[in-house]
Length: 78
Image 1 (cartoon, helix red, strand yellow):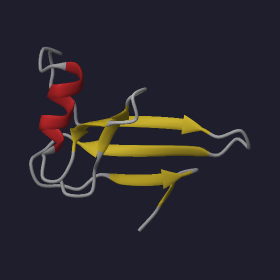
Image 2 (tube, helix red, strand yellow):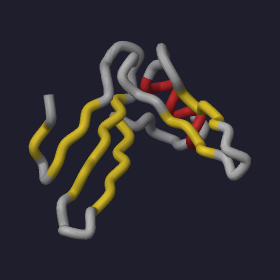
Image 3 (cartoon, one colour):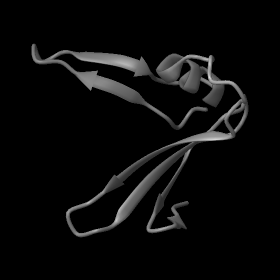
Image 4 (tube, one colour):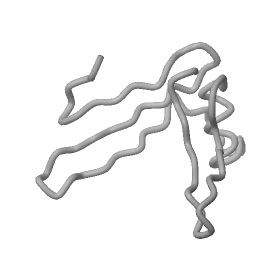
């Protein structure tokens, strides 16, 4: 996955990169929640509801080849 970046802006003004550049969805899921979850997941979703009620969802596939995607109110952005 080349289209996902997860980082933490730190109080000292620096940035801690968690994921940047080439990584797989499996690596992201394992880093965030380990790999001890019983049956393997199909994907991970991160969802935010805006103040205006729009639902923004980031979909991270649990595989080695697919890219992450984003949808707003169920419509996938290209």
